[in-house]
Image (cartoon, rainbow over the protein chains, first blue to last red):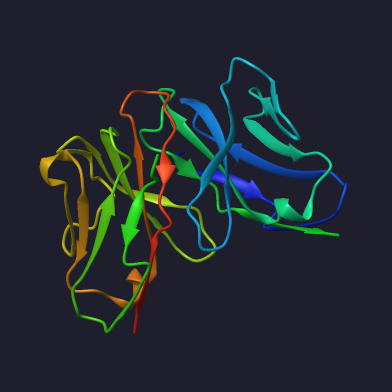
Length: 113
Length: 114
């Protein structure tokens, strides 16, 4: 019930392509779904987040799509750049806050020039 | 503003030895978190503080792990004695303390137990 399942484990995309990372959850009490970006040797940094009352949120080249009925959400990175190469984590929490983030296992993205 | 500061960055110890990690949160942030990130995994919450009070320590292995946040600012996480399975990155994060505010992570301490 507490798990967040993330796929794929790793992803290789050509520069300019679209990167898509998917997450699924079981606990319907989750009401906040952030994505974090982590570079080697650094802590995770919030990239973009969504709440279940909207189906899509876009910030620059990053878009979250949310499907409440399927209990799935995904991150789309448009026009992927080599600088986007990092590990991406989806997460979920209850009560709208950061009180207890449940993280997925992560996706290692490599964008080739 | 300065970010979350953690020290040391790296630590190598032999099993059964004690180890301590230190965290200085962002100024004005009342909530402090300790997460553990195993290799190839996402972070897992160990403990959350609201000011000086530990409000969620359900996933802290209390037989060997302890934490404190004196004066509601800096925090220390201790492991005694360390086991091989404790090898991981220990991340500290902080937030303003109200719901819906972003948690900022430090760079972490990479612990290797040999």
